[in-house]
Each structure stands twice: as structure tokens, then as C-alpha cells.
Image (cartoon, rainbow, N blue to C red; front, side):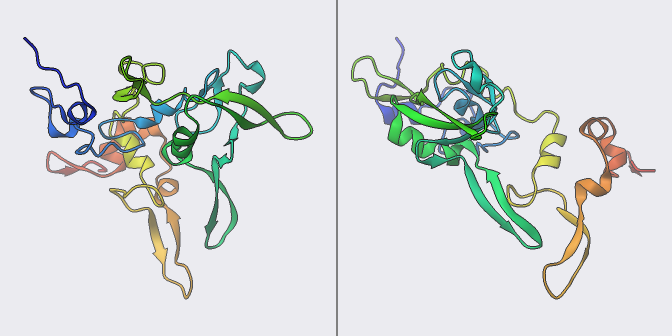
Length: 234
């Protein structure tokens, strides 16, 4: 005999033998970017039927049903913009792409299962093209009640895809985590000089001038780790 949770609350709190506490949704850190337990960016890639988006940006990487959209950039879904205005001291104002969890959460809540007008960049003189695409629900529907379960639909994320892009090796997050996103385990700026206004300095990555591969292979030298009692930079 087996015991299987059937209601939504039981499903969300069920913990299989041997699994750590972080496997529960309410206990996991589950950063939206790689590096921790899950990479939830992957569930948004196929949210719009007929196209596949880049997991971290609005680029259309595949569009078998809409060839003209391949290589274009998703600007808006219905009334929900995928971009946000940014302002930075000493820098010109501009726009940046919102993380999927911020950009598309309302889209799912408002339009799951419906056709929505989606705006993309285009190569035509007008600069944009609008295509109606259907918004997929995030969760599998119960066959009995047609209400959402606690299971992410496999159409959106195949087995293994929520963890396939987690940071390995660790140097990925060491580089990527920085100001305006996630607390970094290194300085964001070095050689900082205090001024009457905003302080000036150099970005850490620009000072190191190391590529990802160089950091992967020579971390103890580049970062001057103490290895075996000796400075790795020596």
C-alpha cells in the first residue's frame, strides 16, 4: 500500500524520504538565476505556444509555427511590457529586460489558456510586429476537477530542465552576482574614490580582465586563494 497526497496542500508539503528541507517550495531559496536549487527561468521559455524564448532574455530562439519571429525580441504580451525604465547616476537613462518571473507572472494570472497579442521587434520599417499567441498555464490541470495541481506542466519544463542550467562550476555565480541583482561574495567596485556626489571606481570584472574559462581553470591564481598554505597568485 502506498500513501499519495491528493489535495493541493498535501502535494505542496509532501516530503519524500531522504529529501532535504530545501526540496519543499516554502523552504527553498530557489533563485530565479542559476546557482541554487532550481533555475525557474526555464519554465517561462515555452509559455507562449509556437515559440521558445531564451531562458534569461526576450530573444526568440525557436519559432517553428512563426518563422518570422525567430531571432526577434519580445517587447510586450498584451498590456504587459517586458522592459522597464532604469535610471543610474552618471549614466544615460535607458531600459532593461525584466526577469521572467516579474515580467510574465501577471500574464499567466490574467491570460492562461487565452490568445494574447504579443509585440516583437521586426526588420520592417515600422520596427515591430504583433502576433497573437496562446498563453500556456504553468501547472497541470486535474483531470477530475480541471483545477490546477502542484505539478509544473511538462510542456513547459521537461524532467531535468529545472536543474540543467544551475551553476557548475561555482565561478559562474561568482562573476554574475553583482549590484542591482543579488548580493555578491566579492566587491562590485574596487579602487573606489569618494567624491562629493556619487563615488567613482572600477568594476571588479574589468580590473581582473579574466574570461570565464580563465577563471574556471586558474581561480586559485586569479583570485589569490590560499592553497596549501601558499597564496595561489604567487
